[in-house]
Amino acid sequence: MSAAKTLTEAPEKASGRASRRVSTREIERRLQDAQAHCSERGALLTPLRREVLELLLRRHGTAKAYDLQDDMRARHGRVAPTTVYRALDFLMSMQLVHRVDSVNSFVACQLDHEHEHLAHQALMLVCSQCGSVSETHAEHELASALRTLERGAAGFEVSAVEIKGRCATCTPRPRAAAAADKPLA
Figure 1 (cartoon, helix red, strand yellow):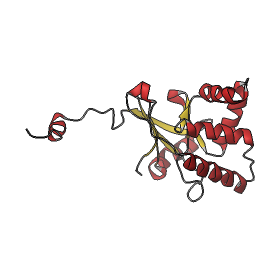
Figure 2 (figure 1 turned 180 degrees about the vertical axis):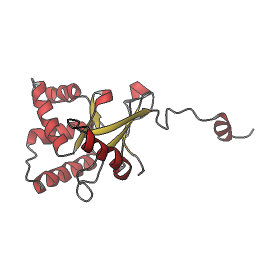
Figure 3 (figure 1 turned 180 degrees about the horizontal axis):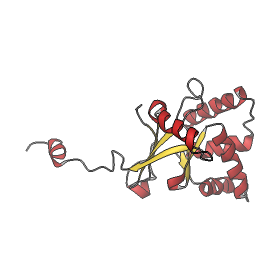
Figure 4 (figure 1 turned 90 degrees about the horizontal axis):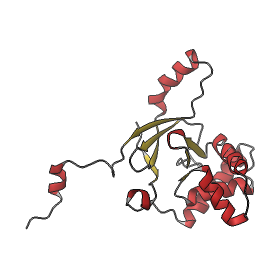
């Protein structure tokens, strides 16, 4: 399986640890890549869709739709939930955003859209303790399961595969490893 790419860590108040910060430069680069990605596919990344993606990236790559609606409301006043959901639907259709059903949130795709972004099957690793989400791509590993679905499970659509567990930060370290980190007196 390929190495996981961390999308985000849960907000500090939820987990007691710092969130991964995304620079303004990185956000702008990601938005430009998204614009090019959509243009290459004959789709339009409208200012509204771009803004929803920007707000998602500013929230460290993960948010619930209502959080994004609140962010838009702070900028523009009243914003209907359907406005945000339509933008998210478009961004998902372009595979710029993935929905993580188990935590009812959306995450920005971590693939390099300029170079490696093709239709892909995302594998989401969801920490059940802090809520962090990591995206990894396991095309070969998932291929057998997808073929089985295509053959015998008409009517099912795979959007993302989610696996719950505990991230490295939330997994308790064995006592021997923790003791090795303590300085000798």
